[in-house]
Length: 248
Image (tube, rainbow, N blue to C red; front, side, top):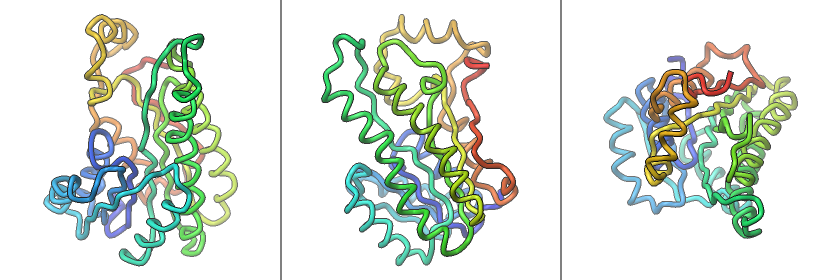
């Protein structure tokens, strides 16, 4: 992996898919910055795992991605502490599922704020540092729900579809500064978020997956590492679906 000594920021990095991404990039020798709503001490174990995996430096920061002042303050601190920002992985996300006619406006707002606004704010602030160094990799975590929609997920699908449009626009705007922006769209991945689903819902998902199994966080991390790599410098504005063939 061509990420050795690159500074990689991962939102939602303290657990689940974010943790898997952090460990994958750490194994390639990247310096790891975990950004999460969790307190730093609750990320200590993942920080230790990243160091053990090969990261020359790893640290956790508490961050609310929906708060512009918080994003600017923390990203500026990371830049000072690590001496630059090379890779941004926008992984932080939430769900508040319900059918359209029953969905509360508060559930709509919460999901849009974290998944879409949070990604926008992180891209906007981190891009300033990437532009100055004339190099950067932005990888946004979308979803197959953003590609095809999903009943009961009007807010989530809209937020992730928005992430895909945002990714393409960022790719076009920053290409001249040697900054790429790409997206990874996971399908049904085994995480804490999907573990709470009823057995019949999981079985229904399995019927839509040609490979007939759920994905693992490490599957998503592999795709993120591909886009973050120095060797992917000529790829921008693209989306990879990590979904076992669910969407073709």
